[in-house]
Image 1 (spheres, rainbow, N blue to C red):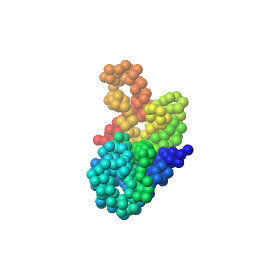
Image 2 (cartoon, rainbow, N blue to C red; image 1 turned 90 degrees about the horizontal axis):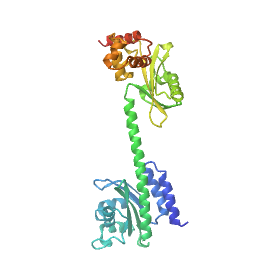
Image 3 (cartoon, rainbow, N blue to C red; image 1 turned 90 degrees about the vertical axis):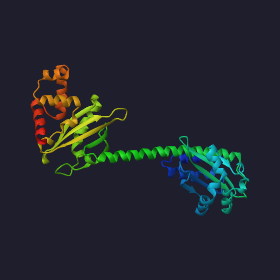
Image 4 (cartoon, helix red, strand yellow; image 1 turned 60 degrees about the vertical axis):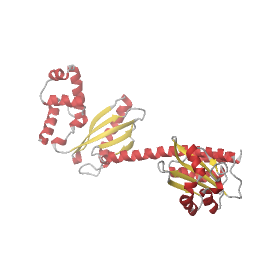
Length: 349
């Protein structure tokens, strides 16, 4: 296997494992010497609007990089060609007024001991974001067509790796934003797989329950496990139950909902109850809009038939709604439901 081809494989393998842009740059600078021989190699990440460097990584001196920014970038025909045509080019092939030797960039390279320059564009999602750069001294042979082809392939690999890394970093940022948002909610939330293994909890679920050291999640675990068993065995999608710690008079309403799709996961909401009647059940939070309406009619003393007439549904449909309301509210009949609603309303007046 030719040396250059082996180097290209190593470069591709190194870039495959890069998860961040910094990883991409490190992998490139480590592996690319086996692909293109040069005395200096670099990577420039440019601002898409101004064209100024955001990130510069190279195995050359800082003085040379600073000299290039001050005196060479504005007069670099190699860079101009790469930006305009999005193709690799080297200084022996670029055409400019007065020739390469008269270009300001050539003088900057000469002061650092270089003579030949090669650059290739790095493109991410169709957008030019920077360049990979190579420099040789006057004692070295000029860059060849094979070098240009290798630079093009290397730049393409760097661009693909940078695109993957960008998506990875953006996903991480979105997850962090989502977690920070959920942590600000007062509602305890738990995401678990269908075996009951916790995938995520927000801050409220990790807080100790009133009067003890166990968190809301700790107290709700048995009910969550029971709900997951129902989801696995009976293809149930919603489970509502209660959990309690009699030693501290702590009561919870635990509502689990199986998440759609192929994730095999569930979202559980935990509602703590205190001794205050109004807070014994956050009723409206766990009922659908239709169930809330029917519960309100029940609290006003309407019969099943009267509710059916108002809702324009059958009496059997009303009965089915009532069964779900009783299950979610943790009550066994209309009277208990009415008591909870009246107690909540009285506390708010």
